Every structure is written in structure tokens, then in C-alpha cells.
Amino acid sequence: MQTELSTQLGVEHAVFGFTPFPAVAAAISRAGGFGVLGAVRYTAPDDLRRDLDWIEAHVDGKPYGLDVVMPAKKVEGVSEADVEAMIPEGHRAFVRDTLAKYGVPGLAEGEAAGWRITGWMEQVARGQLDVAFDYPIRLLANALGSPPADVVARAHDRDVLVAALAGSARHARKHKDAGIDVVVAQGYEAGGHTGEIASMVLTPEVVEAVDPLPVLAAGGIGSGRQAAAALALGAQGVWLGSVWLTTSEADLHSPALTRKLLAAGSGDTVRSRALTGKPARQLRTEWTDAWDDPHGPGALPMPLQGLLVAEAVSRIQKHEIDPLLGTPVGQIVGRMNDVRSVRAVFDDLTRGFEEAVDRVNRIAGRSGQ
Image (cartoon, rainbow, N blue to C red; front, side, top):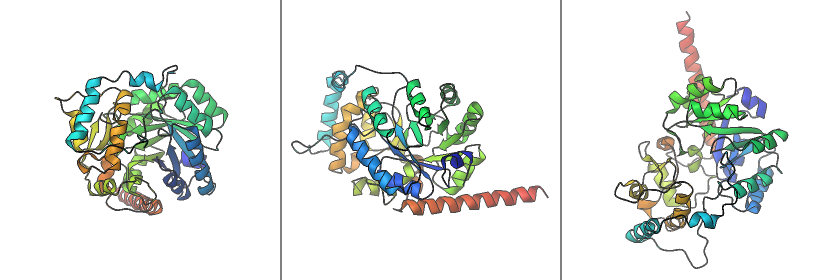
């Protein structure tokens, strides 16, 4: 499954795997793909450095990249406390009442409230980059569009390709104008923040919009047949995230959540603002229903919502409150029916890809007779 982009990056298969877990990222690269570590949860530079050290020790010299969440425009001089002060008391009360309704226990005294979505903040994201550029990363991806121009230049000075996610051809053209090297066309089916255009429509639109830049297809891809379809639409690779959540290398810290993912069908997700304030596809739960209820207060804009619900989400996950327990995941969850190693997922992807290509070649051969 090789393309010009995979050859340029020195990987065997044009499979780009986004994951928040270092062990998964390293396993993806070892299997012949391109592992991309999500950095948004790293608020302390030393924590990111520790995990990049681990990847370096376990990637067998294979290439890998980093994904950050960084606004295109600088947002300086705004502290987390400043943002916290903007959260209305009514929304805080709604969180307290919802947790009380389901009997969600609190955290132990002195226990950290868990991951707080602060990676979008200028000082945090730039701190991540200061660490990342000390390592031989080959790709820097940004989930909030094109990163600031100075970041693009800094990456290019280190021979690091820059990728940005796009949910429409219009967004993709902006990335091209900003000097981005790779565009990830993320369809409606994908997990996390998505737009409203399905992958089958979006991928060829983006390919045409940014030609000759390489495009990666994301959303609704979890099999070799789907990967072959993406390449047939003009993509130079696939960007997969959800499918790694149920691999044996993933570290969800929640057997109950793993069971929910394995049991979920492709119709059991929803695009909701409950987690971050921006529409993000995730498992539908009574937590997302509460935030999407028109009689409720509604989610706050990003980043207020993420800060508001950080402790609540930590409590729900720690105590595995089943009706409220969820995670970002795409519609491909309907195929995630058992726990497999990253290598097993790759074997399935490559075998399915070869079978799909052979099938199309046979059809093309018959039509040419």
C-alpha cells in the first residue's frame, strides 16, 4: 500500500495512525505504517518528553509524527484562570446536578482532576513544539487547521512536513495557501471534531482543490477495502484514529469503556458539543443526551466546555458510570468487535487492500476485453 507520500516518508504502508497512546504509535510505525502521537493532553513538557523518549526507544528507528491542537492565530496573554472565570455558574450547577442524578462519586482528596483541554492555548502548544523539535519527528499535524506561519516555517527548517485537517474543500484551499504540505480530508463519519461532509464526497473534492498536494482520507475507514476506496478517490494514504482504541496496546484504563466500544454499532455515535464545545463525534450516552437536550443549558464554546467538564469526565471514567461513560470515536466503531494487536489490525488492512485491488483489476480486465 505504497504511494508517493509513503515513499517520501520512508514507510511501507500509507497508513497514518493517530493515537493518544505512545505504545500504539510505536506499534503502528513498527508494523510499517506511520504512527502519530496526539499531544493535546500533555500540559507539562516533561510528560511529553518522557513519552517521546519511550517512542524513540521502541519504534525501531521507524518514522513517526506528532499531532497538536493549535489555533492559526496567536492567543497570547490569556491564562487558564482567565478562561475559567468566563464559565457561567448555571453551567457549573448543571454539571453538579447531572453527576448527583447518577450518583457519581467524587475524586479522592488531592487526586488530580484529570486531563484538562488546555493544549489549544498558545503557551501550552508552543511548549509542546519546543519539546517535539528536539526529536526526529517527520510530520507535524494540526487538528485546528493551519498552524501559525512561524510554526510552519520552523517545521520546514527542520525538514518536517506539516499536515492540517480539513472538513471542506474551502478549508483545504486555505491550508494550501498557508504552505501546508499534507491535507487530511476528515469526513463526517470520523471520530472527534468533524465537519458535515461524508468522506466519499469530501475526499475527491479536497484532492481536486489542493492538487498537487497529497491528501490523506479520514473518516469511516477501518478495513483494507475502505482504504482501497480512499486511494481510488485520489488520496495518497489513510488517516485512522478510532480503530486503534480497541487494540491490545491501547491504554483506556477502563474495561467498561472497552466493552462499550466492542458492543457499539455504527449508529451508536453522535456529533455532540458535550466534550469540547465543538461538534465532535463520540459514543452516544446519557451524558451527551443531557448536553444536547434543548431544555438544558447547552454546551459552551470551546475551550470553556472542555474546562467545565474536565473533572466530571474524570469522575465518570474513574468510577465507570456506564450510562455516562463514553469517548470520541467514529462510525467505524461498528467494525471494532474484538481486541486485537496493532499488528493484527495491519495484517487485516493489508490483506483486505490487496483483495480489493485484485477484485477491481479483474473487473477492469473483463471490461477491457
